[in-house]
Image 1 (cartoon, helix red, strand yellow):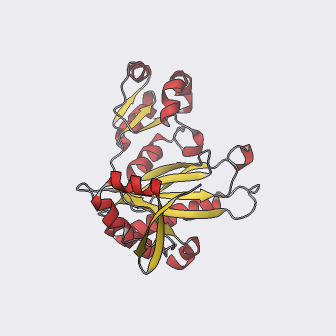
Image 2 (cartoon, helix red, strand yellow):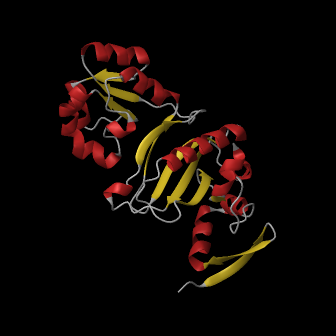
Image 3 (spheres, one colour):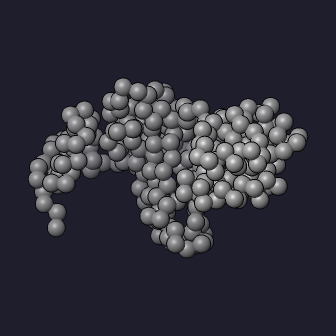
Length: 257
């Protein structure tokens, strides 16, 4: 049973809140509550309007990250409805990614020339086993996966294990490193059918955030499994770090192009 505690009037609409939601808002503080008052939680906004609102409701002193959450109509328990991949956002994410490349010989030289932060082989396997994690992404050539595989129990739970589906197991280390540095983001559907990903910073111009969001939306639409039935793109929402969630109208993406 849900106990309704209060009703706010936001954007001309009445929005009821539960006792649990009241507690959460109290914990998040006045700035969050003030930001929430700018959002009509009963409405799904057009892309551009949602982006402008997420910027307006960002109240952190640092440059907040803007993230998107997609709720997909898939059953992640079924092998033929798994969604995983990567895409290079046209305007980057605003974050500098530290790249570790496992490679030898000429491929190691190519990785260094491409801008990899760390390049090596078994020496870095040993460092990671000892608790070193000063990197964000790992790229490995296929011939190095025998060594990298030893780190599966360490890297797997952290989402750091290289994978061919995301382009991080490849002999083309130059492209892999350059794509990551340019703003490549990985996506993967979770157990609840959600995909979360960063699309930039609150300081980005609205048009750049909207373009990044649309790129990711289009990528997921193209990745729709043939086995998925019913509505595929169920919900889309954007938020900034510590800010309120803002629903986006999926049908507005075609208009935004």
